[in-house]
Length: 263
Image 1 (cartoon, rainbow, N blue to C red):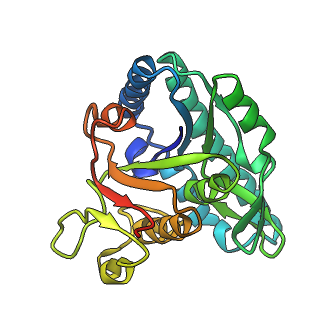
Image 2: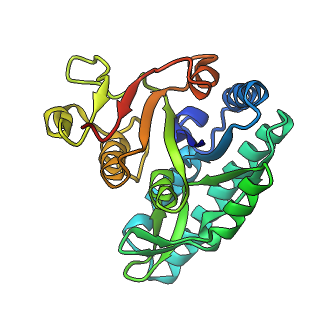
């Protein structure tokens, strides 16, 4: 069973301060993954993380998501890739120090988009990593784009593409919230294509700088994904709770909001 896990940018960085890496948070998450792998050696994972206060702040400054055409915009495009890669290297080093065998793969090296939609990305390194017991690590990044010149691809965008190419059965999205909240700030237990319209008013943007749409974009994208892949389940939950990632990976906890295809 292949599981995708995302560390939200707001979880592993302080999105209100530029390039503020939360080392201790990633160390704890890395330890929780190591514990889960020790308890279940056949656990297959693909990890991703948001760009947080690294990529998002830079992308907002240069307007990268909307398009890249002028020399200044291309310089900004390259800068966003650099800072996103810097964060990913820090995450990879932290995971490696915890004994988690990650292989950091830079999406922008092969990603191609069409008006903001990811249409291709190298799969051979990911297949090789999984075949040899390694954990591919991807991240929110820039992408060349046939319409916009260049753009931003979020981790969810990458997951959306990879889920259609890999035998993933569940996706875990860890953030700074307990799940998706309704208007009374109560966690919505389940979201399906059938009840999405009823909870739309509860979906809002993420706190801090986020050029990829915040919670609303994440939920909409994930609901669209389970419509395409009805066997897939997606869970949004609080990555700040010690031990919860381990328990969820080992299927001993069912936290947060579950997104699934329904009937």
